[in-house]
Amino acid sequence: MEKREVIIVGAGPAGLSAAVEAATAGCGVLLIDENSKPGGQLFKQIHKFFGSQEHKAGIRGIDIGKRLLEEAENLHIEVWLDSEVCGIFDANKVWVVRNKKETVLLQGDRIIIATGASENAVHFPGWHLPGVMGAGAAQTMINIHRVLPGEKVLMVGSGNVGVIVSYQLLQAGAEVVGVIEAAPRLGGYGVHTAKVRRAGVPFFVSHVVAAAEGKDRVEKVRIVQVDPRWNPVPGTEKTLKADTICLATGLTPLTELAFLAGCESTYSPVLGGHVPWHNSAMRTSVRHIFIAGDISGVEEASTAMEEGRMAGLQAAASLGHVDEADAMIRGKAIQARLDALRSGLFGEKRKNAKESIFSAMGNSNNGAR
Image (cartoon, one colour):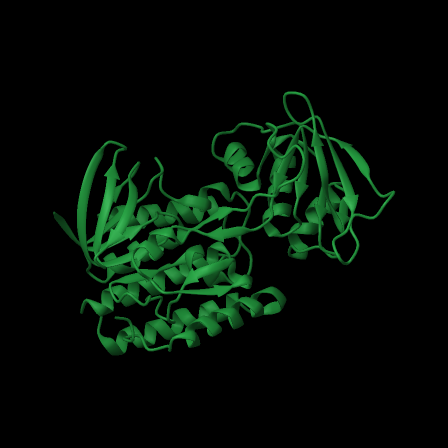
């Protein structure tokens, strides 16, 4: 059995940030990802981040990803790509299928799980037709593979993902025939929504997909208004000509590995459902295991990177690579940045949800078994 000091599962923004933080502290780090390229969501994000300078305001996600990869390379972090972690057991043993063919059993002194989240599907008549896809899939096609998923696109969901991907589809040459939102108001930040509005895209609040129609793929979409009880309003159906339906209908944390490893769970609808309990140091109920990013609750990429830094720092501190006083000072600084990211109408809900998780089993950094 091969041994590593810190094993990180997932090379997205949280995993990369955790790897850089832990390696900087002096840990030997192995970073594992099932994809052929590291970077995760960052390399889909061609838009500029906004907020504060410390949160990379004005820098495109793809450029942030490049910087993280350069840091990882300079720190000589070991990276396994095209490698799937199939299970974690006995608290610190990791079963990996490497290069899609070789089975390897690893033992890690500390494990950080940063597996992200998966897109939610919506079931409606015709949902199985080619042309119905997650907004993230469309974003991957246009920004990674340079393939236009369709010419006429209906976006379902007006949150940040929905409006950002709508704008990127417009940039790629598609026509966005509309953005529909089941709730009575739009969900995304105004700065993103305004750009799509200015491009002439119509928004339909309190609307859902009644059916997708077509022979071999989506050809048109029927949408309908719903009342406050989510019942269709008679006489409000509209038919839109579209060959693609993108679903930006939320994300669900990818928690399977953590729960297989025996981590205790807690439930938060604000954060995407069942998530592993963790304290403010990102440590789970299994003392060897830390988490970071969307597995701990669905938020923004900036938050995922800060949580990755926290997990990497605290994992290194638990191994004796960082002085306790230094870890406390740096941890407080990271927590302050997380609190800043969670300010405002939407962020405050997530901040309260996180604090509820912390208090669910006690917030001691050493309280895990």
